[in-house]
Structures are given as C-alpha cells and as structure tokens.
Image (cartoon, rainbow, N blue to C red; front, side, top):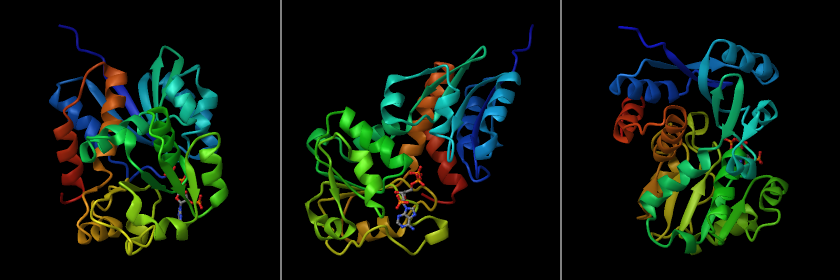
Length: 278
Ligand code: ATR
C-alpha cells in the first residue's frame, strides 16, 4: 500500500505564537484520520512575498493569513473570491499548483456565529460596531452585503469609520453618541483589542446605558470573558465571545482546502481546553 503524502497547511502572521489555529485544525485532521498538518509560520510584514513563495515551493496546499497581512496578500494572488474582494481583505488562501486563490471567511464566519445569538430578524436588527480595523471591515461589509441596513459604527479615529461606511447606509457615531444611545441597539459588537490580555481591565465603551434586551458580542476569545462581556452579563444581556466566530471562520477555511466539514464541537472543545475554561 502507498502512503498518502502529507498535506501541509499553515497560518502566517506576526505575532503568531499565540495562534490557536494549529490546535483546532490539527485536532480535526487527527480525528478524521487525514495525513495532514497545520503549523504557525512567523512572517514579518516586509517578508510576505518571499515567505509565500517558499510555502508554495514547499508544497503547502493552503494557508490562513492573519495580522498584518490580510490586505497585502491580495497583491500576491492569482484570483480573488468576489466576496473577499468586496470586503477588501483575505484570510484564507487555497494553493493549486503555483496558483493562489484568496477568500475571506472572517465575515461569513462571524455572521454564522451571530445567528446563534440572534437567530430571528437579524436583517432587521439595529447593530452597533465598535472599531473600524480589518475585523470590523469584514463584519460591516458582510452585514451590508447580507442586506442588514441598520448598522452604526463608532471608532477612536472617526475618519477610519467614515471610510469604512463610505457609500453605504451605515451611520457614523462618536464614542459619546454611541455610549448615550447604547440602549437602542439590538446587538453591540466589540471589534477592538480592548479587553485582551494586554488591557484586561478596560472596556471599549461605557456600558452605563446598556439594557438587557441588547446582545453583547466580543470578537476577542482570549480571555474567554472580557470585562465588556462581564458587564453585559451584569446588565442581564445575552453575550457571545469570539470563540464561535473563530471556529466558524476556521471551519469554512477547512472546507475550502479539503472539501470536508470539520467537527465544530471538537474545535470548540479544543479552544476552551487551551484557554482553560468555558
Ligand atoms: P483588526 O485587523 O484586528 O481589526 P486593526 O486593524 O489594528 O485590527 O484595528 C483595531 C481597531 O481597534 C481599530 O478600529 C482601532 O482604532 P483606530 O482606528 O483609532 O486605530 C481600535 N483600537 C485599537 N486600540 C485601541 C485603543 N487603545 N482604544 C480605542 N480603540 C482602539
């Protein structure tokens, strides 16, 4: 009997050691008895092109792209999925021979995750997005492409939020306006790094006016419970951390590479075990 060749996958970024992507993908390869391996490759901004070339030469079949390469990678692709093109960022690359095709699974992954907390009338929901970086961009563009019209964005740098909303029906709010109006939203989403390990004791926005009917969502998954989410619990809100988004985006990448659906509960269990809790 012939041994199957090892299929190689990776995530590239800087920093990269903290990534849990290798854990969840390798757990699924193992469970599905696939001859495949996923590793984390440290790639600095200025070495993107040569490192991608070397991945192709080494036979990698696909890779995830994270900070700071999600926009720069587009210049190295042979083809881009129209949805990723509309979002303007790529987090998944499929390698076929020496040809690269880019996709964005962050936006669709987030949308699938959000349906878990807000399964009904998502299209009619009044949504506030805090932040205007790459993640916010994928999320807001996905909302707009899915026909969600009541989208507001607030950000420390107003110009960046303005750029993000250009040509759309979305509203730009100052942080103060967003804080004062917090009670009017069905869903409030933090896409900034405020609440991560480096600034555990901060929240992206004051929750004084938050009310229990609002779903509070944080795309941060480490820690599993940010201060923002804890304050949501105190106000009686339904909350969601970044684990479901992380898992869904990974599952969509896995499917693009292998044509198979991974076990979502195994992915979730793997992340929670790694981060020590639920
Ligand atoms: P990502 O790709 O993960 O979204 P990013 O592109 O660096 O990361 O965007 C991070 C977002 O968090 C930005 O909206 C950023 O605000 P600015 O546009 O003003 O830079 C926001 N952010 C990061 N650190 C922040 C802080 N300490 N206070 C307020 N906002 C912050």
